Length: 634
Ligand SMILES: [Zn+2]
Image (cartoon, rainbow, N blue to C red; front, side):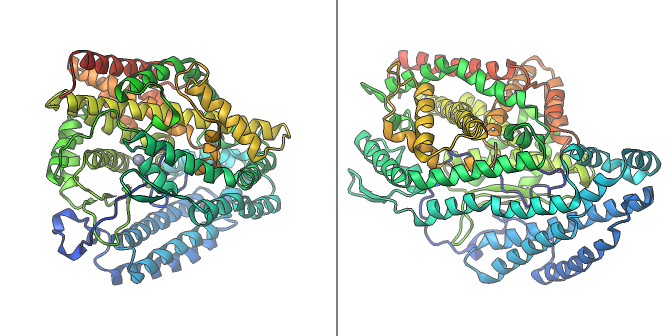
């Protein structure tokens, strides 16, 4: 991510590939019948849609006027400070316009007027990018001494010091203006494989329909597959897997050609900007050392026995004679029959985050009743959940609360993002308020961890305890092991492509099959992985994102280590670990993510945080085994 990207407003945090996107069809609910206390307060942004339209027109004028700074950044400290301060103001106002329009549109995606507002806001966003595209290249033409002198002379530039330092980092990788223009134009072509893949996967691929043992007919598109791969009936699951993967196989040659074209685009970017490898080119954006990536892959491979212990436990709990790849998503115990109100979820979330201290708690409690959140589903409302925010206003979060445990967990997750936004905005100037994705998912998953910790303390019986512990194991399997397996695959295919190897769909499937069989212990008889499932790579869109998925694993490792340090501290009455974590949140984007994390006490250049996560995973399994041996779950 560029360090001047909009603070989360324009970023949709991509959901991890394992996340289920299957949403049950909801009944018609008229938004106007929902109590105002369950809705977000967009009035804190603009009093009305008319006021929004007026602000947008004004911003459009100011965006065009920004052009006058072109060619003048080197005129002196004052000129540079004027330009950057004005840009910050434009970005902040744009954020307000974009968040408002997206929120209005998300309230009911079926209505055309808010949809048009959203499109206008997005186009204004592109316009600002275009109008200011000269800025970074011009900064890079300035001698370092000019920038250093300006920083020393002009107080207003102090808040831009990190931004300038980050821009200057790119100097060895920046070409002459004309060449950069050609590379940018080629960039438009570089997204073609991903676009074509999306159309094929989401629209054109002829997905099969299967009949389940219940008589239900299910179309196995990716959402249908995500929902039915967790069915309790094994024969149903096998039917679902075989039908879905057979459909993927039919297009293996096409999806292989597409992914291979994407790899070539990454190699082009590597060469154009003088990076030694595609991995280094990708990680340079957040200044993450490649050693972190390679260590993750190595650590996970060295700890596959922990995954295998879980797989054997899963086989035992499901009562299967043999475990297969089709058995990985079935719930370990019957679902707990318990419903929660919004008020329950708020109370539980606040109780869970108590270890983060009274200040955090008070601010979140205030936010949850001050119009941050749009809680309930209604007809036409955007599915899923997200958190966003406007600097100088407050965070906003969209939920579709349905009363299930997962909905409580989602509230805790989004509240983690929102509090990160709030604390960073309180402490940072606009220019460093935006945090990297590498850090973002730590704040959210840490709150999920705390929620599970609290729920385990409050659990009424062993059945509830087993359900919670089982979910924790699944999240470690899917986020830590599976995402790292994806990361290893991604690295392997890039390296092969960089050696000049032509990668066909067949070659990709063979490589993936070897990997998935190694991870799941196929040869040791732990989990049977049929050859057909080697095509799984072809339904993971993240392989087009250029080394993105490893951050899911590193985030969970970091949040697990931080949770443990905070809870251990709490037990001793010590607050140092908690305070370091709150400092990490408050730091926003004021430094590179690796540095910020190290200051919080998590050094991902060593194996220690990963090994701590493995220790926790083993402890959870020991707990489950002891519950199981104490008698049948009630
Ligand atoms: Zn998130």
